[in-house]
Image (cartoon, rainbow, N blue to C red; front, top):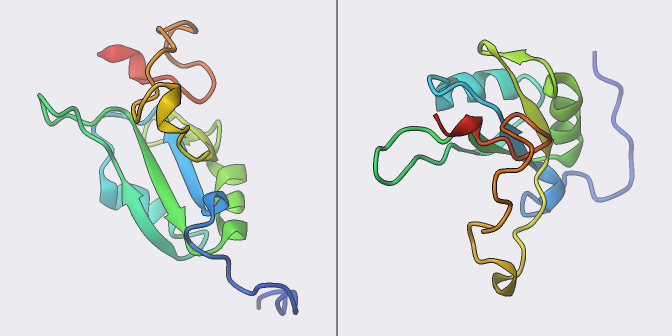
Length: 129
């Protein structure tokens, strides 16, 4: 019982469209890729789930990225999950912005020296535990 589609337009979004990729912050360190896939795939078809790990320890870094095939599904997931309890933690979900050009701090973003103390908007790398 869907809504019959919207007609016209581009149909499905291009998965390389930045609007299809979500940043998920504040994740529990025991949250698995499989759990994220099962929760987010309720909103639509996923093309990728990426959970970065610390290179030295192999532990999760407390955030990840989920990519949908359709930007409308990404927006629906963002609206439904952002600020909610997710695997025991309140998570931040927002549309991931493209990486800044290399001249503005390199691939890791640099800077940002920890102001905001953890759980603040969007960044919150899990308090460095």
